[in-house]
Amino acid sequence: MPNIGVRKPIFARPVKHLRLVLGIIAGLAVALAGVFYQSWLPGMSNALALATTHQTEPFTELSFVNPTNLPKVVSAKQPATFRYAVTNHQGQQTIYHANIAISENGRLRSLGQNQFTLANDNTQDVVVSFMTASPNTNLEVFVTLPDQNLTIHFRSRS
Image (cartoon, rainbow, N blue to C red):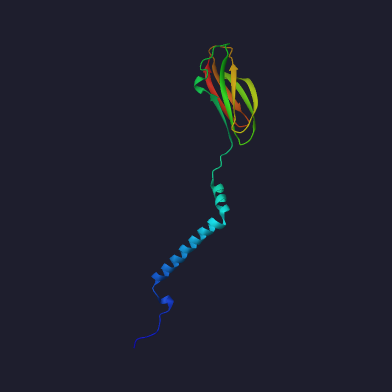
């Protein structure tokens, strides 16, 4: 005799219906979380953007102005000139100390020092004149910013 009027328990129904119901519940939970995030926590998206945005590190640029025009041959006892530039990207006003030196056949001598203050994103252009006393000399000129651990140089001949 058949069981008329007897229902199967819910847990005995096919699993595919259960998966469908759980999928709908999960989708609604994600949608509600998105609405909550956008409407009740607007500051969180800004904080997340700030936390993941790359911030540049402070730095200083040291370079020769017109490097293709650096003196390649210097006449003995005749002045030669070159220019260098310092650009401040430290994010604040910075005091710079520059040392200029020349090596003549391996002997180093100072050509002088400069000190200047630069506001952020400003550039100082410096002209340097120098002479060598002897002909047939291998020359190397150095510009150093010791506080920033930066040096540039070029070679020449007299």
